[in-house]
Length: 170
Image (cartoon, helix red, strand yellow):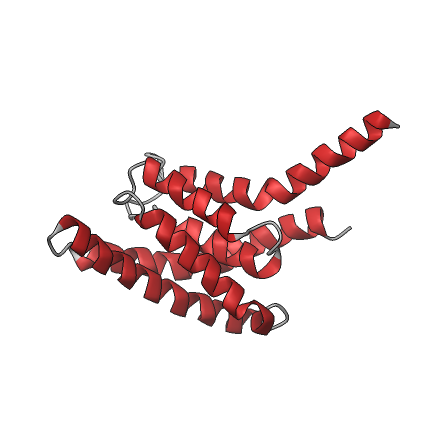
């Protein structure tokens, strides 16, 4: 009986850790040297993942989990220290803000909300990076990152949706 309880607790912990693990895996994929094209994907896939999981599994993607994922991005050197963490928290906050309106909304509406969130956070990150670095960074890489971010959101939603149904719909 005790073994069953421990097994159940470990299974539950792994189920709740899945959104964070998926986000960290996407972070590692986005910095891989073998990625299919040379776009600055560092925050793209991660922001989309955080937004998705915040809307559809908020108990598993809390602001603390998002902050941890963002900090991991910072520690990998993808942005000035603290910027990735701040962006992750903003994305999570946006997802929490829109959650009640989007949880049962059509995919197109969720995608538009994500596109708006993505545009705002990447402009914010670009402006904040300019303040931290004391120079204006080239805006084209961040614009490309935003376009890739929004374009890949449907694919990520499909994959995360299947994973969500497998793990969370009991």
